[in-house]
Image 1 (cartoon, rainbow, N blue to C red):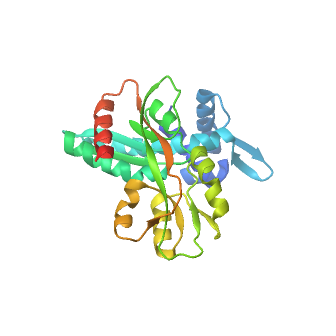
Image 2: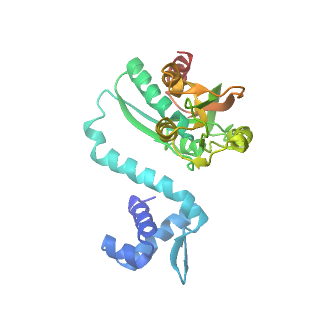
Image 3: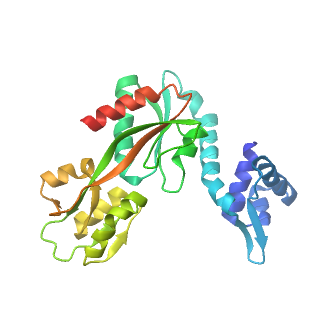
Length: 274
């Protein structure tokens, strides 16, 4: 698939129309239509619908967009910056389905680099992007997910579940409950906690944002043990009495032909054991 077609798709999605995209790209509308049709023919799916309200992405177009952004970004990096940086460096692209693992991704990258040398590194976390698909299609080399993968193109390593503790700030009489929306297992577990919370429920998409919010404003929420360990020791957070810990499934996903999966698994296991 031509990258001009990917660039054009993203331009139409951004500008909201074929005419506007043609003007921005300084090409004819016929060229824009041809490039979009190229992607639609290769995928077998329509990307846009046209109506009285203008041009909008189809459901498939919405799903395709983050992959297109990744492809264009990676192509730009590979074409312009990679040639000068590749000597004696291992390329590693890591991702996580949930924001509670973005600190773990950073620690994993450092551990991997200490073991095997300097990296060409890409880190990504995304609630909406399927990490299994991203690994299967070589957008990522390895990913952490809470879902059990069943794609034959990938191999999965089930790890010890992530332990989340229900904690609160000290001397908080009417705590806000911060809900991180971390999937069905998480939601099933926290429903009773939400009902018991006398304050409002705040939905935040990033674990560290939520933690900072609780520490500054006061409140309660479920957080990974490794993220809040120092705050517990310092007395900034305290466990909620009688609360049951949440054990969130954790899987490491790599491609079946991966040459780095064993090293990533070793580094990840050592990190979590420490």
